[in-house]
Image: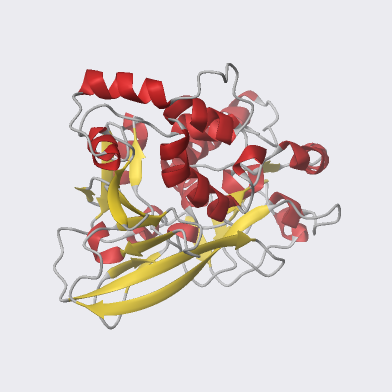
Length: 382
């Protein structure tokens, strides 16, 4: 190590993308991770019993409209075509998500054409709500009470542990309703799944002579003194040893089980009923449809509040959390030679493609700052 080196904390997509970009620019990069594996929560590994490639921390489907990000990830592994088709079990019936023409016709026992379905759903909507103030009001105005209670209310309450009336309306605006039979969960131009899993892609990204990797290594703030700059992708509050309190997250528990043959016949089955304690079951061999396996690996997924010793997944970025977040962000802005990147360090929910885009931008911003002598921001996105 020299004082010209770069330290990156976290060997997930944020850290690996920055490491590769800086290494190719000629910089020496040390990257550390407290876990014993690469790829963070995208880590994948083959199940020894079945041979199925398992998404250890829950499923990740790559989807983007960013052609540069799509080309970047394909430099390090083959991306196979994959369409995410989600099903939902509600009231003893199985439906397709997102809500589409098939869902509407099946749910209401009708045979509506697109224009008829659009008019019918408009009749179900609560038009007395002019400006929705929360998740529930947005849903009632958007799809009406019956579809809301079937597909959104129970699932959302289980996922977030909150009454939907306390969640912002903006969450639901991201969920589409389609008046055709398109059941592709995502509408992005590029969609795929890595042929050999995400961990193999991250390993290829870090395969460069200027990158030096250390796993099972916890970051100490004093470590940064030996480096020209640090990119930190751990929890924002954790960086400060939680001295002002803990930011709120949801965590996930997985009940893993195997079965002979197929278990549910699809990759993702949601469960919207409140009396079912888990939010969904994922069947991992269906995330690699180009492979054939005689047996199967499934996860029952439970969401709950994140405790001190739990792995944080989803930031609960509600109004009540803003003062504490402001406190930590203000403390971070007083630091030098460090940039906070990624989901945990910026306390934002990020899809993989956005994670990579922001990491590319951060690495390029650092190189530009070195060229023109300007300071590197502590946050590029907050």
